[in-house]
Image (cartoon, rainbow, N blue to C red):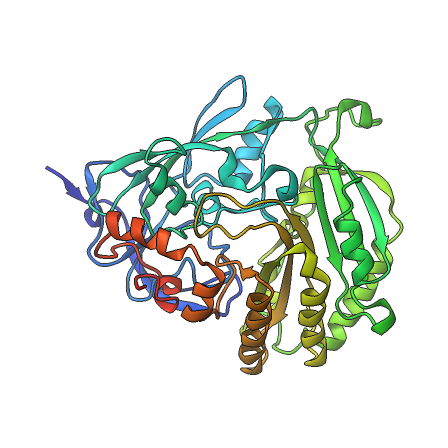
Length: 455
């Protein structure tokens, strides 16, 4: 006899938010320690939620059920060649802690290690190496997926391929990812050989970012979007590659990094503390501190996850929260489109404390995967008043007009019409959704906002 999932796991009802603390909704929370064919889903709409690092409403399900996967994290196997098998609730931090001493690292990683394997597939996350290695799903050999009727199927680029590609970037709306087989990359150390290069303005910044003679695997450029007209868009390009043992001099153990002091933000900062003036000051200090570093060695955490040393850093934006706005546009229009967007933000005196550029290589076969060939910019903008909503609508129009799109894992405000313009392969995804989840058991606030059930 099947046990009902509701009777086997704890449940409570809570108000949750995205990482930006702007999108909020109330749902019933379940904490399964395992999934299997003996379980059935709770009544009503369902959505798996990992560690809650989606910025907007992608991991919220108003008046529905959230299956919290934080207890569903186990590393099951690691082959000598670096093929990892783990449950979808495993965090990247857990994977690195287990695999790095054995000489393996993640092939693609976003800007935080506090996300789950399942979340990485659902958002098809990208890293600083997309222009070389593509997105996370390129290294996923297969995964198992629980469908709305409880059936568990295996998906790969060869087996159940349409469902595989619909789940990649599908924001959890095709089913619950259970186990993942992922190819890791071999490394000799836990360190990154980095090279910092100064960019005098936005054009120079984009020129450096697109310089094909720079052969480092990883590349990201910080942008000062509050600099004056002469230096508008100046920044620091930070490239890197995995350091070999020959790059380390005074480090005894190449897989041990210094323990960092962790800072925790215990409360929400007062609304309005982060504004155009403080953003200008912060950006000027950051540029001064990093503009002449040249070549040096950093540990992997300092290069990939600088914000992870500050717990609850999202609270510095206050209780109103913030919008992280990330978009990609074709490279040949990058200077015009990105310049327009930064100018709009500057004109409205909305300072961004985090503005980073990356270069994307070609996209993949997943209809809702965000990366496509071009330049991507991510911005953190405080939500101080409703005027930000109308500004984002203007930015969406610019992005669409230049053939770009915004990232669903960070989006909070996109309209259904604009989404369809930015993601022209949506109908392909919807056909798979209707085949495997015809009654929309897997649902979310994002799905309803964007009307992802309708043509």
